[in-house]
Amino acid sequence: MTIKGQLDTQGHARVMVALRPNKKRSLEGGFMVSLSETIDLQQQVAKDLSKHFKRFANSRAALLGKDFEAFLVKHKQTREVAVEAGAEGVPPSPKVTYFPNLGVMLGTVDEAGLAALKADRKRVGKVVASPDFSLIPPVTESALAGPAPGVSWALSRLKIPALWEKGLHGEGVLIGHLDTGVDPTHPALAGKIDAFAEFDFLGQRMTNSITRDTRYHGSHTAGLLVGAPVGGVTFGVAPGAKLASSIVIEGGDIPARVLGGLDWCVGQGVRVVNLSLGLPGHDDEFSVILTLLRQRNILPVVAIGNEGPQTSRSPGNLPESLSVGAFDELDEIWLSSSSEQMAGPPARTAPVLIAPGVGLFSSVPGGGLRALSGTSMATPHIAGLAALLVQYRPDLPIQKIEEAIIASCKRPSAISSLRGNHGAPDALEAYGRL
Amino acid sequence: MAKIDPRLTQAIDEAKDGASLQAVFTLRSDEPDKPLAPAQTEARVKAVVDAASAKVSRAPNRVVVFPNLQSFSIDANALLIQNLLDAEHIETATLNKA
Image (tube, rainbow over all chains, first blue to last red; front, side, top):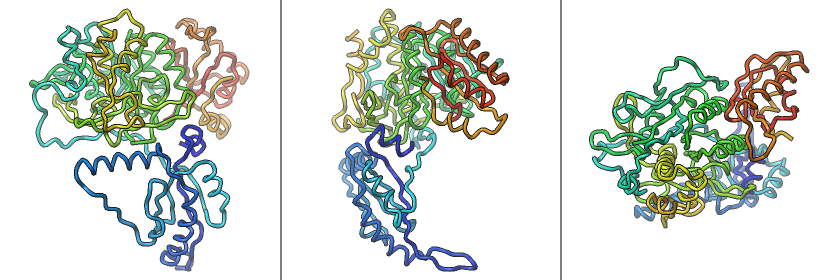
């Protein structure tokens, strides 16, 4: 995101500052920066400029620091920080980190700090937005043991089996599934794919496409949504529901492909759409599409992203999304789960809620099970829960289903509202509220 | 006033003569809480694109209508896309690129 965009949405921006003063020496007909002399010069400048950086309680660095401290306390470890030679005067902090060998400062500024840095042309070479990462795939867990037999920890944590006992498995509910596709031959997914489509770069549905997964991501999220037990391992939230599944994110996750998939899903009659995808940054233009989905009584459940605090993806960060972050089996926030506070309007925190998303076994192409972590894995748990509640009360507008889910949420005590917002839902309580 | 993706404006500005772009447009409905019916969307897309094409005397390379989402994607000359930005019924315009 641009510096201006960050300032507008958060009131502060993460910037990278390249320092100007350096000493050059001629070298083979050209010039080269003399590192040893420049380091000393620039350290003084960095020390002086560090006053323009500020610590913000909801900045990415501060939140990551808090998460890390909690992790250290829990695991009885101490924090040891190495200070690079040449950076002794500017030790790393949540407000700024100085990289002496590069002559670069990376930190958080407000508008006044930014203006001061830009005005100091003698000592500041360039101020640019801190680079964003592009799509980060789910984390593969190195599971030494296979999946434990029985109901997954994620389903138990959300009390999903309590709804199964009431006869709710998602029968009659169609869920939109926009992903990398799905492997229909997997034993967990046999008979679960009601419709399938593939879209080109302009969002045109391709004819004669074969139901398949172009990678593994889609089969995994599909299994978490509607998968049947395999080998005594139970991981699907709504095994009675079916999917309208489409390939939209392999080979170019561009807006028209997602639109094509959503448009097709609406035409198929879905009540819930699972979007374990997102474009980095803020795409407000997508708000219109999500509003249209809601006007058609369809709930968009969207992953918030895997890039940690003060990051988020669109459409998950739009106010029309029921956005989902991830936590682990110990009721701690997953460190890479995105979260962001937006000035708005409307002022809000994303994600709206959190769900289990760490070390979850589900189906992958070829018939096996694999453990993955990510908000992509957390999202199907909420979409699946919504499907169970839609089966219970198909007469209600989707807004009421969403309200019941949110009202049932409780936030684990170790997770701040900035990271986990409303917390994790309780399926039985949500059911009771309808 | 349409909400326009700045990346699209930049792409139009940087496009050379004859260069094609891909964009996604959503349409404004007549009543705020009542979306256009699929048939209305199709008719309106045709009218809007035909009018813009006539103005610049160029036909689009391809148009895909999303009737259930009141929107369409288009592959066309940058001049035609620039013209669509000013069309009466356009609500948003986005560059079709990750």
